[in-house]
Figure (cartoon, rainbow, N blue to C red):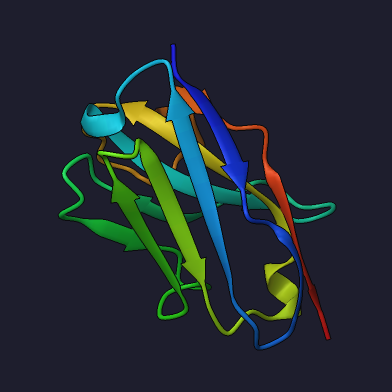
Length: 125
């Protein structure tokens, strides 16, 4: 079992930045594909970013590409999401997720085995 705990959410003005962290316990994350998803009020959960188990490949939704950066530190068992140039449409609960081994479709939530409880990000205009 893997337990995931997100942190770093909060209230930020449009144009600002936040860095989310997701710390894992229970298992080493070295062999897990990791992803960040988000869910805005009244909307379905959507993929934001993903990173391969080696860290060598990253994937982003078109809506965040160029503004968000996903990274991982396997020594710290932690995955990060650096979010820059935030706008009000980025307001959502952000979830990290872990999938055993390699996966092909990073954007599909049913490919992930473990989920955190989420952290709220609110961007004000």
